[in-house]
Amino acid sequence: WWGGGVFFGVFFFFGGGGVGAGGGGDGPNTQNPAPNTPKGEVAPGYPKFDGGRVYINAASFFENVPESVWNFHIGGYQVAHKWLKDRKGRTLSPEDAAHYRGIVAALETTIVLMAQIDALITARGGWPLAGSQDAAALSSDEVKSFFAARGEATAPRPVHTVGARYRVPASPQQKARCNVPLPIESFSRDDLIKALLGAMEKRAWHEREDVLVQAARNLGYARIGKNIRATFKSAITGAIRRGLLEYDGTQIRRAKK
Image 1 (spheres, rainbow, N blue to C red):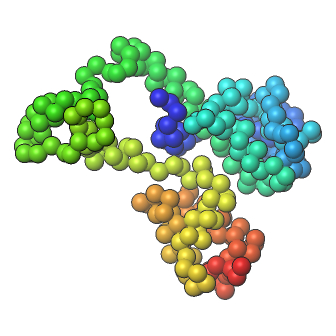
Image 2 (cartoon, rainbow, N blue to C red):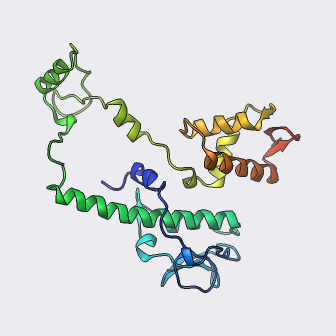
């Protein structure tokens, strides 16, 4: 049940150990506050893991990557491998290297939290937890009793499940927990630029702040903190440099194709 992106998104908010980069140094990232950016392109046949190092080519690597992090899968993907593989043939920028270190740190913390939560569940008798009930497996009479206790006359329409069964709707709190947006660090620079472009009408000039806010909302953020704002501003600067956006000194718009 740990395969869902909700858990990864929630745990990505936490800090945790880091990962160094470049060559040399065998301590955790807390002892290497200014790691180097691996040099060169992500070569064909890479990345490769060897003894705590993730090589992007024959000579350049990220340091201090736990094997458990390297082998960690979410939704069928080996995250630490796939992120670099998707950038094959590309030279990593300092921002890319910092982003990858953040992914490794988040995965490392996720693994620790998973073990802690699994231990708590085991200590309380295993899954499902005592007192919980699968709403999808309630009979029609049980559902009617449930809604009668809440002072509601009717139950929800049946869903496509086996037999005459109903699914009890989630509470607003449950819906909020299930709809937690992914942390901004989980989006690549290209993802953010796509969100920015999608927030603008074709060739119309827009205030940067308006585009930033709309793009953030399109990714599920109801509120925009300093980190989200700074990340989107960096993406806007990157899009301007790549010729994807035009900037007149105050406003931005999509560049001509």
